[in-house]
Each structure stands twice: as C-alpha cells, then as structure tokens.
Length: 376
Image 1: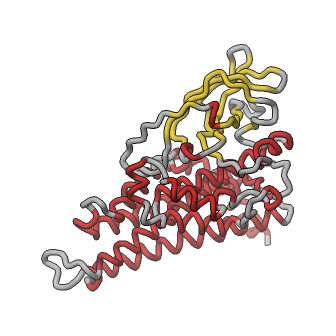
Image 2: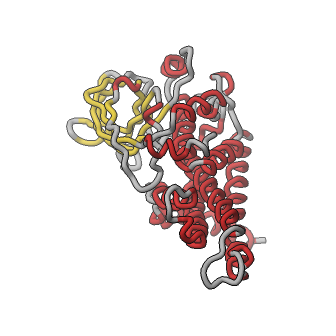
Image 3: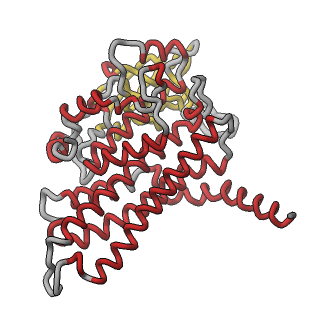
C-alpha cells in the first residue's frame, strides 16, 4: 500500500492520510516506546528492518516513519514523570516530530522556559500531535554553557496547537516527507517538558534509551538509507532483464560488465546492512546487560550512518545510470530513489567532515588494543 501511495504522497508533500492511518493501525509510530506505555519496545534491529522495509516501499514514507518513531521515543525517554504522564497518558498515543537542534532562544524562570524560535525541516510534522524544538538558554543575554564549554540546548516539547506551520515544501527529493518549516512565538515550556539535547541517561527502565538522541537519530537515518539502496537494486534488476540498450548484443542483465558491477554493488549493500544490524544488536545487548557506552561506541553511531549513506549514494547512482531512460522519465521509482538518497546525504548527520572527530575515540580504542597486544 505504501508503494501504491508514493506518487500521491509526493504530490501532497506529505504522507497521505491512508498511509498515516495504516502506520497507526500497525503501531509503527510507537516501536520504540516501552510496552508499559503502549509501545512495542522493539529490539533496535527490528526497528532498523522496519525502517528499511518502509523506505524500500517509498523513501519519503520511510524517512517520515523514522523521524516520527525515533522522535516519539525522545520525550518519553528524557522528560519528567509528570510530563510523560500528561503526554502519553491520553486516550490516543501521541506522535512526535520536530527539529531538535537550536532554532530559538529561551530564558528560564523557576524551571520553566519562555522563548521563541524558527525551525526548518520538521519531517513528519503535519501529522504529529506534539512538536519538539531546540532552544539556547540565555542568562543575561549570554548563552548558558555546559561544563565542557558547549552551549546548553534544551529540547522543548509542545502540543501542535502552539506551533505555526509553513505548509510550503517544494524540494528535489524526499518530497513526501512534509518536512515543513515552523515557528514558536513566546511559548511557555513547563519544567519537565524540556531536557538537555545531549542527555544520554534516561530515567526510564529500558536501558536502550541510553543511546541518546544522537544514537536514535543515526539509527533512523541509516535504516532509511538501507531501504532506498535495496529498492534501487530491486528496480535495476527488474529493468535489466527487459531492457536492451543501443549497441548492446543482448539485454542489460546478460552483459558481462553490468553483471560484474552489479555483483560489487550488491555486495556493498549487504556489507553495509550487516555492519549496521550487528552494531546495533551489540549496542543493545551491551546496554541491557548493564554496560555503559564508551566514547568509541558513541562515535560509531555517526561513523556507521555516514558510511552507509556513502555506500547507498554509490549503489543508487550505479542503478540510476544503468537504468538509462527509465530512470529519467517521470514517474520513475528508480529516479525517485536517486533524488531521495542524494537529498538525504545533505543532512547534517551525514556530513563527512564529522569523520575527523569520530576517528579520535576510535583511534584511541585501537591504540589501547595495540598496546595490550604488544604487552602479551
């Protein structure tokens, strides 16, 4: 059904009501909520596979789902008990969206924040019931700082009624994600309904939440990229055995050069997928056994995310080029894969410049290993 609705979602600029309702009925928005809150409390590997499956059906739907399902876990994981009771205790389970990076400023009075802000790329916001927004906290016109010198950024959660949405969303790819701009004007965020963006220790029982916002976000983005890559391979396989290009002696799928390159790119997909599922499975096992994440483990969230997006962009590009004219003429599922993955690679979480910082704790881990081996 998601595949059948993909073109309509692109035209609408957000997932169609039919798709949203189907995801509600399946409980997919609440995969990462504890069971006692009405969620699936699903293993992270299951969530990765769900994001991959939906993104393979339609990249925009997979992107929206990963944004909503990870976002819906965040206030549950990090807000106060009183806030959680209000947000999640109603007759209908909430759906979260929003841009959690700083787009506004607020002042604190008796634990409550008062502030305003303008935000971009609120993926999945048009069907969300609560919206999260990051704000710098100001003290006498100066940014409040954390002990490491970085600015305090509080993620503030407010009902959608307090948010003004800009409904224009006209972009090259991910056209059906409803990633609209929005703003908050002079809102009050009670104590407990806001939390530090960098928090990595949850007051809830499920220790998976200790991967933090960054870990949840990287997981969602990576699952999306796997799905678009898989769909591109599926589409080029379909095209290859029904298409004969000019000057080719037979159909594309029987050409030696195509077969050679396809084998390499198909292996790249499996290597990226296996790395991802093994990594997140090990992280969950480690946390649920009572372990704490090392700096190298946390660095690998983005390492994995950036790596998989690089692989995906190469695999999808190969499929798109080999698809020839069938990649170009709309509507084209392979063309949509190409547009979606290359828009996705522009996200800040996928900026390859981060690899230079990611490498620092990972190198330290390898240095420690080498030192121990030399001492044996």
